[in-house]
Length: 103
Figure (tube, rainbow, N blue to C red):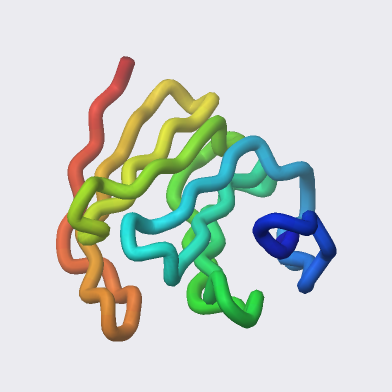
């Protein structure tokens, strides 16, 4: 992650076991979600780079990730042919509910 304005590196988000195919900031800017070829979405503290959660959600590589405008939902897309919506308790990133759609 780079510092706004200067591009100076503050920290690296390391942990995926394969390439990263997408990233998104939460609407409040406090969380970063990364989607990897290792089939996981990882959530990070945007200020410190500390890991918050590691979510294995699909059976094939992740193609992208996005937050809903209110930050309560994470939408994922995968090469397994599915898109999923996950609703989380923001205080501990536990899944409250999920929805899956095959394309």
